[in-house]
Length: 77
Image (cartoon, rainbow, N blue to C red; front, side, top):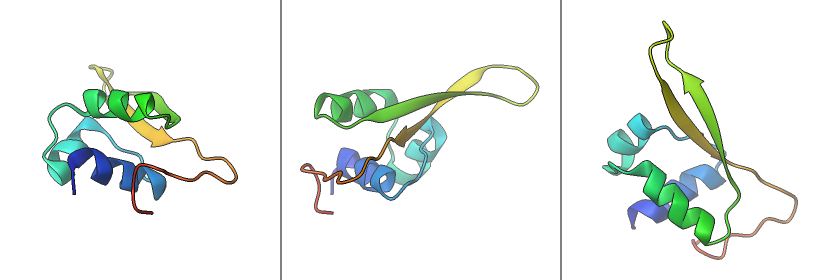
């Protein structure tokens, strides 16, 4: 299964994904690019900016905004 499909499957299961999660779980170094591709396919992915503890930087956390009757046409769920 491709990285993007694995990312989308986890988003559909309600998980929030950070760049560190993507590197560990999918060997994906460019999560923002994968998210951009999924958005172009019509998935409503939300970005939440998270501040690191101590206020030394930020990172993005991505989740899927679900709505009633959402059906993924890109994966096998």
